[in-house]
Image 1 (tube, helix red, strand yellow):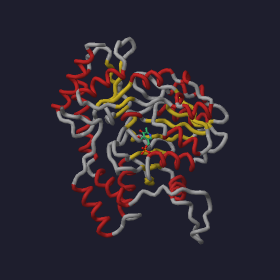
Image 2 (cartoon, rainbow, N blue to C red):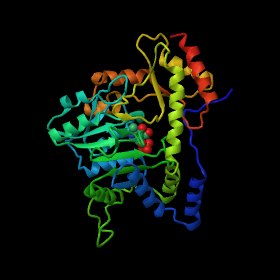
Image 3 (cartoon, helix red, strand yellow):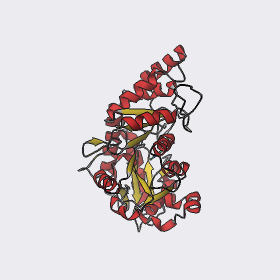
Image 4 (tube, helix red, strand yellow):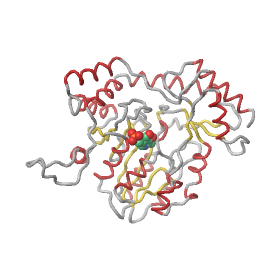
Length: 372
Ligand SMILES: Cc1ncc(COP(=O)(O)O)c(C=O)c1O
């Protein structure tokens, strides 16, 4: 039986050429690929500055740290997300405050944010989840009204646009992940982007241990080592050169799935708002609607028996036990995010999927859906 993985990486000649160049020249730590990757990717994201980091998580932590988020502060976050978002706030000893999502798009419901703002609120961290964009006009209005900072987590949304603006360029800071399942990858890696000269300078300083200016080893702040190695940046740059091609393939996979899966009772493809979002599928996400008789676990288990790998969607921030314990978050804080956490999933989404694979997957989804 053929096995179809949930994600895959395509490594081309450019990546190998650039990595070999690092090996042949011994520039494996820091080097020219870091700078070039930062310049190219930040320009692509319509930002003046790009600062690489070792992961999306460290980019988020760096973002929180340079915005001076600290003990006693609160940060409002899209509840349905990778826990890197909430943890990065916790690393600064501040409280992550989850905001519920809109069930059919999985994006944060910006209408709920204002009721969560109080004197302690320092920032809003939005997550452009699964290749869609959050309603940024509303977020930016709130930020202006209450003088809050905005971090955009774009880990899953390389190249995505909101009303013609690249995500990551709208708030104060944007962060990206280049983990191996991301649109382009370094294996592991991240980048912080910004149009602020001041924040960029601070980010470069903090990601590099805040070395002293005159006496290098007399550090002027407590910094971090979040430096992305040149070898990883070489991989990222090689990937970057084919980002348009990668996105075109993703678009084709998304359309092929949609055509085949759009009319299955109980099987709901996450909605996109095309009037605001230029959508770029990261992974093909869907959920089982209320009233479906088959549990998600049984549905995904049945796909697994046909060799089809899937992933459950994120368990939201409010349901994470360590965060409940530390911050008093409650199971029922975000009912829509809970629902998606219990019923959402994504299908294989690697760029090596061909039409035969997609036909096979969709036929099996339809077959199993007879039990809905
Ligand atoms: C939305 C989101 N934010 C942050 C991260 C963390 O990125 P990384 O795994 O590179 O640390 C991820 C990773 O998958 C993610 O999906």
